Amino acid sequence: MQEGTVFQIVCIVLFLSFVTFYYFFTMFGIIHGTSYRFRNKLQLCQQTGKSNSSFFAISTISSH
Image (cartoon, rainbow, N blue to C red; front, side, top):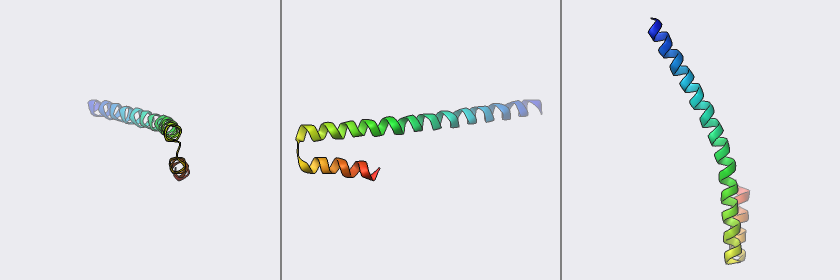
């Protein structure tokens, strides 16, 4: 009985730590990912210098 409760506690702790890590990583990933994509789009616009590429970047940013 005691081994079962210890196992349950370990599972709960692992699950909670996984959830918190996942939450933090997704939040950081979303912030980091959007800024990275935004920078890539800006570089793409600067390289091509076309009006349609800048419009594409604006449309993708507004869609987020």
